[in-house]
Figure 1: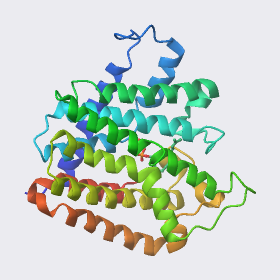
Figure 2 (figure 1 turned 90 degrees about the horizontal axis):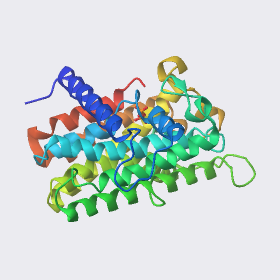
Figure 3 (figure 1 turned 60 degrees about the vertical axis):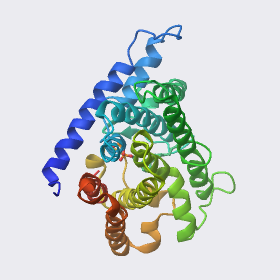
Figure 4 (figure 1 turned 90 degrees about the vertical axis):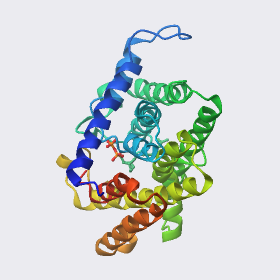
Length: 311
Ligand code: GRG
């Protein structure tokens, strides 16, 4: 049975709303066991950076991949919330003057603009560390071994060999650590950089359902292949939005990649070829899910949504 676009959007909405509730509950003013206190300004900046915004695509991928293995929704949502905390931290730090220097995100001032740079750095640090606290909680899975697998995979996706490493490669390609002149990367190098910077967290989202559902190696591999295609599709569609989107709809500055001389696949391939590549990636994502048959229809729709999204 296929999932209609309307049913997909309604699921995305419900996951986004449940994620919002869960993040709100995780970010309460009252300290929890083991904490000494939660400074109000820091907590306010963490809430500002993670609530009331975001499509919550990553939690949706955790829920949808978990559904393949009958993972209870609340467990997937908790793992998804941990992942979303890391995603939100990365946006706060990425927007800082030392990185992308952006004033607007999700249609409102970035965290360092709404607060100040030091508070934004600490809010990002707070979100990052809270993510691992959340991922390690028994509410994610009653078995400690499963939680350890999840936490390890999350750390590797987010860290030096994943998102953080990819961010450094991106800044290096802009010439930040040398003469300030952008480096011309070839298609392979761009692909490798993007697989780390944005692909790793998306791929983790798909792996998370398999980890929580104690999937077989073959099932895990299938979701890895799906996640890799979705990660590439996400990046191309993000690059296309930077070229074709307008700042008002995006809720952030458009046209920044070209202005910074950033190497993107859209820049190398051209808009039309990039759009054709996007279509190929969506069908590759669907093909990777073949072992799951009809049960994977939500993930098929998610790949389409990611490729066609307007912001
Ligand atoms: C600072 C360690 C560090 C890493 C930053 C992911 C990243 C690395 C920076 C984000 C910059 C950026 C705009 C990358 C393009 C892909 C991306 C992550 C877009 C935003 O993700 P969405 O569309 O955002 O899921 P929402 O707002 O819906 O959550």
